[in-house]
Amino acid sequence: MKSDNRKNRDLHALDENGMVLCNPRDPEAAHRAQMEGIATDDRAAVTCRKCLALIYQRDKADHENTKVRNHEKEKRVDD
Ligand SMILES: [Zn+2]
Image (cartoon, rainbow, N blue to C red; front, side, top):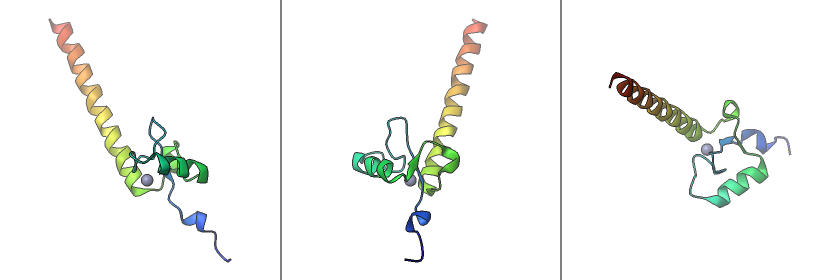
């Protein structure tokens, strides 16, 4: 054996439910990922491109929600 396969594995992100972000409907995948150490909640360490794309989308959505909430507050103050 000359190479460590684990080094080539993608590191996936976990969501708030402990599920793999790119495979949220598969509890077995989440369990496997955690047992094998190929999932992390440290988003800086994530290498899976699907997970990274989903993190980006969620960040964007959070940002939009914050904007809406602030806007609602402003409206209430105006009234
Ligand atoms: Zn992934």
